Length: 423
Length: 129
Image (tube, rainbow over all chains, first blue to last red; front, side):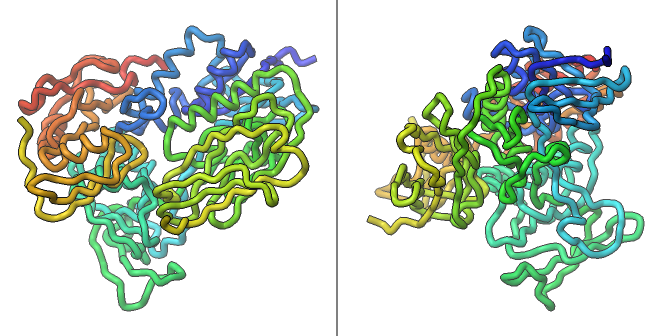
């Protein structure tokens, strides 16, 4: 027998906002809980998100990222949660519905047996390789998150004059942040016709500091030997290809990329957790349990959120369910959406679930005014709801009570959006 | 007494108070302003303030004397005039903290005469590894 094997009811991987919430909730439910974090400090990406606006939904306050994280971190000492920092999960094996983890820690290798596993591994930024920026391999091409780490954690300004490609929220936040620190942001360039970030971030980050936003344009080439010296900007056609003759050269020392986030699911895939190609996260039921019994997913590992408040909620949902000691047989019903939505989460409903209220998260696939959302099963309409505005960057949360009668049979739930004609 | 608002052309203001990001349409009307498109009274108040005197919270970082945390995040404890954002940021850029402050500790009082203090928003200087 391996004496080094430690046993927990719930093990949470990742101590960002999702993992912190999941571990605290599992502990509150009475589960013996382990929280594993690879970095030295807890809080995940919130540590470097020093701007405010976190917690408006949850606390009715505009907190900075570190302040929001602290609301959870400060509860840990009074909880029973075991926390391992500077610890890295290098492998997972499944035996029945239990998971066995190999963890590399400061004290050496540890083995963990856990009844429930919660994946709160967050997401990664898309890089220049993934969007095909052409030109020299010179220094000075950063993802927005890396530029944020340099500026807010290391206290080193990574640029004096830069171009930002992509209008995701971190890019908008960094446009303002670098300007405040004295750098010149020549402009934010977005290939798509509309910005990818929240409308309020376009307003308070760009307009407040007179930073121009150019849509329908992309970076077609970078120049420089040791360090970036200029980028070439070009307009794009309907297929996102640069149009010849529209090029302009902008001298700068950095190109900062804010071109999307992808859920991090390497560990999930290593144990065969089925993923949703739309979200690139796990397929889950309303308790955030994946199709592998005893394995849960939450936060940005599940789908990329725009509000941390919903990340915490998702962690709590997973933590509560993971703490449950029974393993009831699930009767899973598919939840589907057509092309009018980018995605809907959860992708399954458990017909045997005790609670009738389910919470869905969805995004529209295009900007829509006066949109009508319908949820139906075959010919039966379960919900019609109007939205004044829907934008793909702005996720919607939809609580929906569904009775067991409404969920009888095998027909999937279908989410559909259409622009309603004005009455 | 309210400040008078002079508005000659319709203006759309994006409310930044909450994630809804309401687009508030402000239109001149009988010497005043007609507001539409907001979902709550905070949106109306925000749009009114934007037309009179826009206010913002500044979040930034200040240098420290400590190698384990060379900068620490701070913000204004209340809102300051938007037009003062750069001036206040520049002033805070001159500061180097020699004390290990924690969340809520004041790092600068009445910054640039705004009447607003600047407080620390991170515990990275006091957390042990």
